[in-house]
Length: 292
Image 1 (tube, one colour):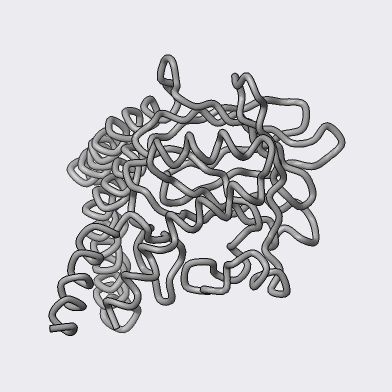
Image 2 (cartoon, one colour):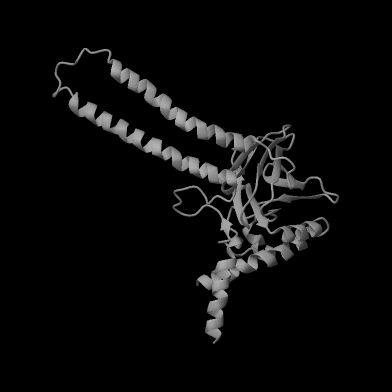
């Protein structure tokens, strides 16, 4: 009987706790990370779409090179042709690339327009400030401002932070304080760097965003996460000796969990994270146990 209840519980966990996953690079990964925003869905589609042009062109060029090497080698063709023009080849060789570029340009411009068109009235606005070598976050437009720094999680601090699970909190990607955001809400990101700092870049692969953080300049981008979970990115601009130790972690949660965390974070940030982790990490552990 106990085994039956355990099996039922495991099934429920597997079916309904999928939002507690974490998207991050995996060994031998060949494709892009799983998209969780509309922009990333378009980016992944466009990446696969371009392969229908890249692969045939590559094979065609390879075949032509092999044919030229074999057909026109010195031993097989001792007297070279003196032909300098071929109208048919020149027309095809001109129109072909133009048509290919046209088929690539239209979806490319549509994607670029979607990325650069900021939605009106975003639900959340966050300012991310890059400094050698950490990220500082500020939630804008709040009566009680919430802001904090986000550092790389050191191995010695894992136990204290309750982040010993390296599958969920991977080395060199996990941070002490994640950026917490609500699911299915439009988020406007304002990105800059400290005035006396260098250029950084805010990149989150699963969201399809990558934007420079330039001192003295405020760049903006947006996203709308479709799935709860813990997502990882990094600074993607060479910014100094600790460039590799400047990760970005975004925890996407339900709207109720977000509001609860936000209300507590202003006065007790560590306590707010402990409460949020208790609610979001428990399903992940249940899934891990069920899968075993």
